[in-house]
Image 1 (cartoon, helix red, strand yellow):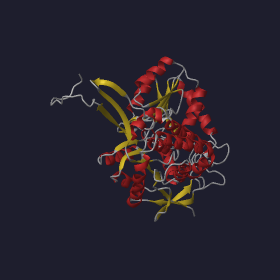
Image 2 (image 1 turned 90 degrees about the vertical axis):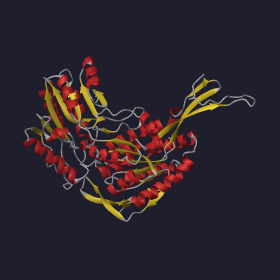
Image 3 (image 1 turned 45 degrees about the vertical axis):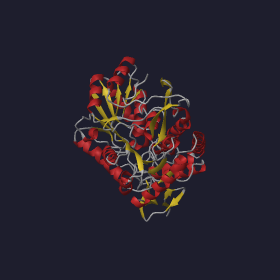
Image 4 (image 1 turned 30 degrees about the horizontal axis):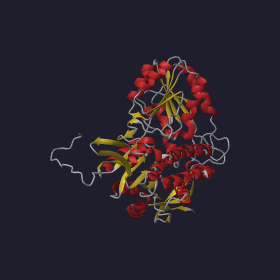
Length: 496
C-alpha cells in the first residue's frame, strides 16, 4: 500500500508512524500517510532556515519567474491534481478543478508582487534629509490547513509567503494529504530552490510542534473556531504572527421580489456543493414574508434533483462526506432537528449508491421551520443540510444574521438596490454577496469573516497577505558634503 511521506528540503522523507487515508466513495483504506511530530517539524524548519538565507536575498525577478512557471504547471496538471483531490476528499473532479483555479488566482496575484512591494520615498523631509520605506520577509512561516480544500486553502498562503521572500512549512490535513506533495513537486519543477517549500504530515503532535517551534515566525490557519482560538492563543503567546480563520454559519436571505428559481438554483448549489463541506457553504436560507412557501417548494424540488455519487463519475454533482464519522454526525443532526420541531422536507439519510454501499454518502437534506434555538441552526454541521428560517421583514432577517456568533459570509437575493445597500451596510459579516450565494473574494482582495469566523484581525491572501508575511522598515538618510558641518542636537529631532 502506498505511503504518503513528508516532503522536506526537496525530497520525500519517511516517517515511523502512519495513519489510514480512505476513499470516501468506497469506505476503503487506499493509502497510509506518515505522521510527524517535533522531530520532523524541526527537520523541516532547519531546512527552511537554510533556504531562507539565500531565498530572502533572491531578486524579485527570480521569484516572479518561479511563480509564473508554477502557475503554468498548475494549469497543465489541473486534471491530474483534481483527480487526486477527488479520490481522497470525495468531491467531484469538476469541483476540485474549481478550487485549483481559485487557488491559482492567488499565484497570479503573487506574480505581480514586484509592483505591490514597491516602497515609497519622501524627498527633503528636513534640510538634506530623505525618508523611504520597504518591506522584508519574516523568515520561516507555516500553514496549517483543513481537509475541505486541500489545494486552494494552502494556495491562499504559500505563494504570497514565498513570493515575498519567506520559506514555508505546510501541515495539510492528514485526511487528504496527497495534494500537498503533488504541489511540492510542481514547485520543484518550477525552479523553486529546495527547502523553500516543505510538507510535514500529521495530526495534533505536528500542529503543536509548529506552534511551539522558535524558528517559525508566523502561522496561518484555517479550520474550526475552537481550534482557531487554540492556534491563536498558543502561537501568539510565543510571539508569532497568526492568521486564524474559524467556522461559519452562512445565511442566504431571499426577499419576496427575488426570482425564486434563480435564488433556489444558486442556494442549492451553495448548500450542497462539495457535500456542504465548505466554510462558505450556504447552511441557512432566510425566507422573508411571502417568499417562504414558494422558496421551500422550489428548494425541495432542486434538492431531490441533485445527482449524488462518486466524485470521478461524469454528471455527478455531489460526492460523499470525508469520513464515516462525518456521515454519522450529519445524519444524526437531521434526526435531532426533527425531534426539536423542524420539518424534514427532504431527508437525505440512509442513501446507498449502487456499487459503493460502504461509501460515506448522505443525500441533500432540507429542513423547514428551523428556529435559532435548534441545534441544526446553532451548530456548524459541515454537511449537505440546508435549514429554512422564516421571518417577516428584511430588518428581522438582518437581526437574525447579526445575532449569530459567526460572521463569515452571507448573501441577499433581491431585485431592490435599496434593500441590497441597506443589507450590506447593516449585516455584521465580512463577505457579502448580492445575488451571489458564495461570495469568495478575488485574489486581489482579502478573505476573512467577522466575529467567531476570524480569531484575531488578520484575513488571508490579497493585500492583507502581503502585510502579514512581511514587515516594514523606514530609513531616514542624510548625505552631507565633505566640508559641510551639521550640528548635532540633544533635543528630540524635528523637521526644519
